[in-house]
Image (cartoon, rainbow, N blue to C red):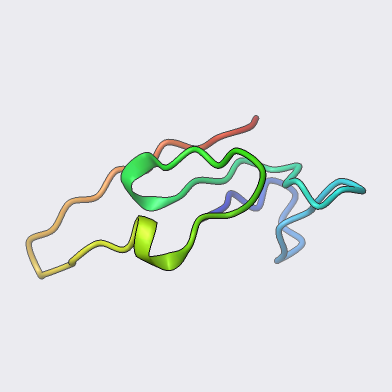
Length: 58
């Protein structure tokens, strides 16, 4: 997920591709050099699920 801080409907990135706006992954995965594989961050969601994701960045 990302926070579109300037409301331009996209995740702004710097020249090497790292997000300039706050972003996060389920399971609060913190990427090192690249985005995680889906299998690393997938979660089960049902009608009672509560999920909290901490944003990285700003």
